[in-house]
Image (cartoon, rainbow, N blue to C red; front, side):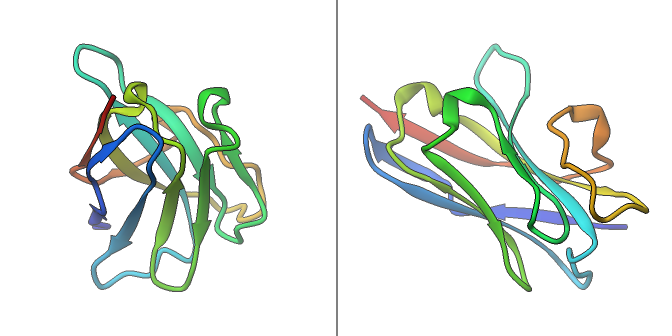
Length: 126
């Protein structure tokens, strides 16, 4: 069973940056698609950014394009968040999907992912 853990959340001021990381204990994430999602109080969980196993395919939703960057290395998947805004506040989750095709486009739909972390809180003060 793949167990994901997010780290790096915190409280920042508007305009500042944060980096989140997603890792798995005992299992490499090398062959998994990874998505980042967030959930603000009273709202649905929404996809933010995703990355394919090779790292060649990434995608982000329009509100974060140009501000958020998803990347991966041997040990973890990272979400670099720059120029943070109060509307970026929420509980951020990473999720993993196993697919036979490792070279497809990544997907930002919740139902595409089988494994989820517990989330890390990001709060952006105005």
